[in-house]
Amino acid sequence: MNTETHTTKGGQTREMIIRQAAVVFNQRGFFGTSISDIMQETGLEKGGIYNHFKAGKEELALAAFDYAVAHINHKLEKGLQGKYHAVERLLAFASVLESAFDDPELPGGCPILNTAIESDDTHPILRARTEVAMSNLIASLQHIIDKGITRGEIRAGVHSQEVAVVFISTMEGALMLSRLYNERQHITFALHHIEQFIEHSLRR
Image (cartoon, rainbow, N blue to C red; front, side, top):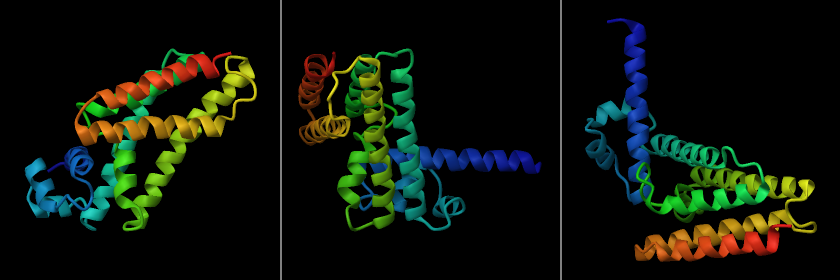
């Protein structure tokens, strides 16, 4: 067998495992997911999974989380594309977070929120990875706001970190409620509130 072809197929199988495992972990959580669940989702035997993730479920969970975060970042990049005014970018950011409620590619809500709630002190490595992902979200919002202030698009004197934290907390908290009650209205309420806040309290 050609080595290059074998490597390519191996890489494709690994990517498939990560992609499908990300969905399972996002819906069931780290502790609620077993290797048997991954086997059922992927159609692979246990040996086929351990062949790519020798450290087992923990290694796979970290890879799946990284995949999920990359998915969010891709959606944000796509949502912000072609938008240059700070207000437009903030509105797009909120819309992307809102779409996590029923994302067909990664069902189960926001993986950063889900993992943050579950990992806590029980899984320090996963918690640290989640903290970095959340910090990056907040930093991205801060950057948009700070740049908007410099350009005169956002009101001077706005505390960018405070706004970013409240923005994220509002949207993620509403996502949690919508997932809990399986009703979109909670995240819809939050999105409307954030949109009004951006227009009336941030726009210059």
